[in-house]
Image (cartoon, rainbow, N blue to C red; front, side):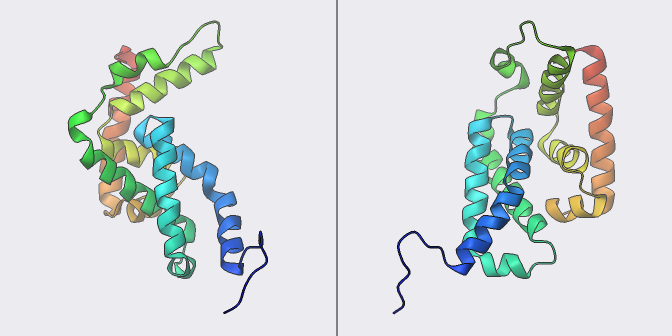
Length: 172
């Protein structure tokens, strides 16, 4: 049995660490935009990365390892939605979490956009987050969500219509 000196990482561990350093910020942003809660987003990312690490060789062999791990994250988010569907917090319930004092219009607009995103159905929210905030193509978004490109197009269209309506009427 080989022993490693304390504190040294195997090649696999080091490869995974480098991978995580490159994708972690994007995963956290995606998770937050999907669920609207930083603490839950952290939990979702940790679950996704733990699963990715336990199947690291398979992840590495994927055509796009980042997309593979993003898919794990989305699946974790879906599991969370299913587990907590009776505990759903409505966007209006989160208004108290966002305080805006003497901040710039940019911050106010961002808070309004986040609230508007939370008003979307979960699949539409995921589509908008992946397409516009993470910059994935329709094909990549379809792969991440496990649906067709046509579904991505229709979900995106519906989501943008609803966002425009919500933001223009100030329904948030």
